[in-house]
Amino acid sequence: MIFRGCRAVSFMMKTIKEVSLAPVEVRGMKLLDREKFLRNVAVPILKVTEENLSKVTQCCRPFFLKLENFKPVQDIVNETYKKCIHLNPEKISNWTDITDDVRTSLSKHGVDENNFSIKEVQLCYENWRYETIFKAVLPENEEGVSGFSQIGHIIHLNLRDHLLDYRLLIGQVLLDKVKTCRTVVNKSNVIDNTYRNFSMEVLAGEEDFIVTVKENRCNFKFDFSKVYWNPRLCKEHERILSYLEKGDTLFDVFAGVGPFSIPAAKRNCTVFANDLNPDSYNWLNHNAKYNKVDMFRFKSYNLDGKDFIHTIFKEHIIASCSSEDKRSKIHVTMNLPALAMDFVKYFKGLIDDVNLFSKFDIEIIVYVYCFVIEGENAVTILNNSMGCDMTDYVVEVFDVRNVSPKKEMMRVTFKLTKDVLFDVKDSVNEPPAKKLCVEPEKTEMCVTKN
Image 1 (cartoon, one colour):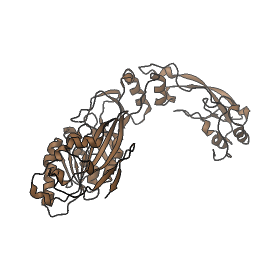
Image 2 (tube, rainbow, N blue to C red; image 1 turned 90 degrees about the vertical axis):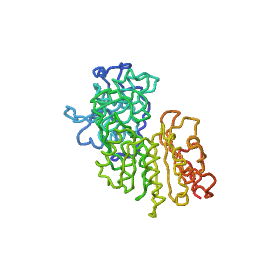
Image 3 (spheres, helix red, strand yellow; image 1 turned 180 degrees about the vertical axis):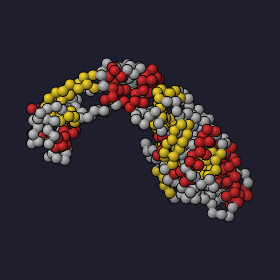
Image 4 (cartoon, one colour; image 1 turned 30 degrees about the vertical axis):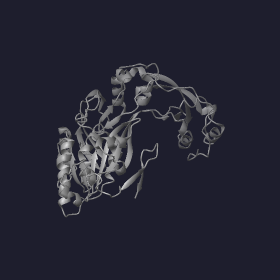
């Protein structure tokens, strides 16, 4: 490894030291007691002069004792040496633990074994990261706090049953350690499939659920306790938005607070956004105004998904067929993975005016999301929901995110053709626009154009 100010040297230690800097005797703690995290640790130090400090630190940086609220380089009261460098005792316990070539390099900067000594350092709660604290406190040989979501100032947890007894400690530690956090909550039951929100228990901090988050150059404000928001979907929102072009039309069947709809409208698309949850609908409109969306391009609705498809979407298709104007490409997003597949059937036979069949010349792309359990197939779910074989019109099957070890959130993208909309069988001989080449163990299907 090469470090500026030192020649090329190896920093491999001769032995791995069995020293742990973790807190001790706190296993099983359920209510946070910060005083019990105090411990004294024997820490190796190098005493150096101010003149050669910069050159020595460049050589020793890989060995620094790196802890929160702790400076590896500190002042000392000494007639000869003014600074001391604290080294990590998990890597070094004596001078000879450092390889010969490194020691040779240090000696050129006036540092030898006489500069090396051991100093007792008191560590406390403030010195450890939350990961280290959880590892020291929570049950061994059990899954710990594997991760969390942060939405504005709120940290959102989904704790496993074996961690519930520790939830107040977990909440307080996160509140202490994550600087941007003011509230920690734990999901206390499954997501309500009607409004996509859930009951929450406040573990630590303020009972303030109004948050503001930024995504895709838009700001979204909402009450996290009453609407659905998942920060893990940011890339998926961005991905779908990249498919939209200026002048396209978006129908967002389950719009939520607008992560698809608002950026699409800002990109000069015509947007029809819908959500059944009245709170989502209100925040959707708030965010449209907050982001200065052109309201001429943006229409919002508080309808059931079925009613939205049977009225707003249907009326637009009929009007487009009857119009002589250039027909824009239509995108339909259906991000309600627990239920969205139950709504795709409402597209089948939606248009019953056979006189419009020959006038239909609209490209419609549907992005429908679903949960797929191990052993299931997303396209099969689509076919069963539609009541017909849609395989030839599937453009892409994409693995959006892992929900649990045996459950994935998937997106099926398909073309909504006029034979489906008019429910006319064997009337159209045109080939499908795209076919699939499925390759196992890939999150995205191979798409071959005709």
